Image 1: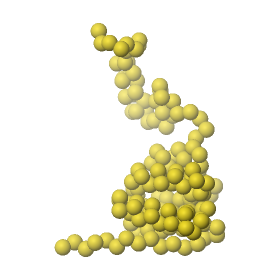
Image 2: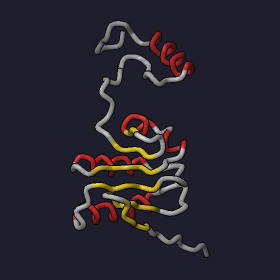
Image 3: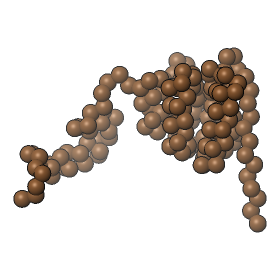
Image 4: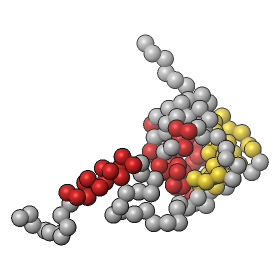
Length: 150
């Protein structure tokens, strides 16, 4: 019978922030996210923390709900930091759009890009292949919108 993995987060203070560290887990799943959410909630509501950091060195994948949790905290005025996220996390779209760095290693959550994201053209960071696909699909779209097919 497989052994249950032990769910554990280590907490330690670093300056004015509390650091949450999941240890060597590379892929966070729903159970990890639930534990993180519970811990973050306790830190914000009971401990009245104003800054929370996440040790991200070994992490290669996080569930999409992680970013939602971070935004919930950010909307409440909590500073959010990701400490040394690896290239896998840095390539995620939400990371690229909502995190910035001052030292090239640690990142902080901000309110998002100042420019509008276009909905009627390829995204600015799209690869050449993606742009080609966009152009091919664009040529298939009707030029005049219609409610009825003819």
